[in-house]
Image 1: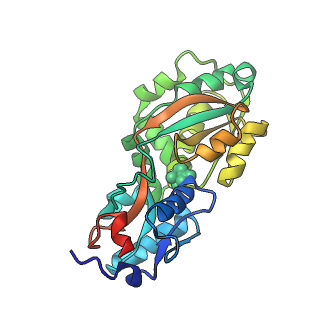
Image 2: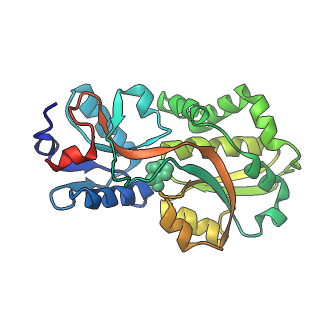
Length: 268
Ligand code: PBE
């Protein structure tokens, strides 16, 4: 495979997402680890802008390098591959954890129990993400998933008292994966009688909100690598209810038609 002019072809640019994302920090680390930090730039934007650029390039079979992650609909919509990461800059497969503010269990034991029992698989999350990508409103895609997975959902609500209108506030970032998970958690809480307030924020404020108690919970902490800095910054100021999903992946992502296989190929 000829991997010579990849840098020239993409203007030595990696198409990134929102600057607060852990994926951006990991990518900066990767660029250092592989000696790309001088010649290459990581472009900031948003998850939505990244997928829009990917779509544009893909349709014209043009070269593009994006920061990608799994679960994500883009891997079912397009033929993509992760560039190999022999230095392990992006860490291993991760889990997504649910965090609550301190004292939430005492204040709202029913909702805490549901959030604690919330657990699903990457393929579950992808079902919701694909529906949203196909045009469904996130809350409708979530409602559809909840309706068609009653048995799984009953495990999450098992033994939890009803909400009777009690409020629960959830914070999340507009990453496609987190739009899916947060809307599903909200839908289940609502069905149990809780009044759920969803607030979309940036990554930093999401962690800060749970740590300072202005938000009740989040289902979006990617650990141990991606959100390590946020997690350590606020350690002791939140409760970690453990994983709600296992088996994520992150890394530089390119269309399969590109003749490169490893991050090391960008060095040439
Ligand atoms: N992500 C999706 C986030 C976590 C969820 C991989 C874009 C991040 O990088 O922080």
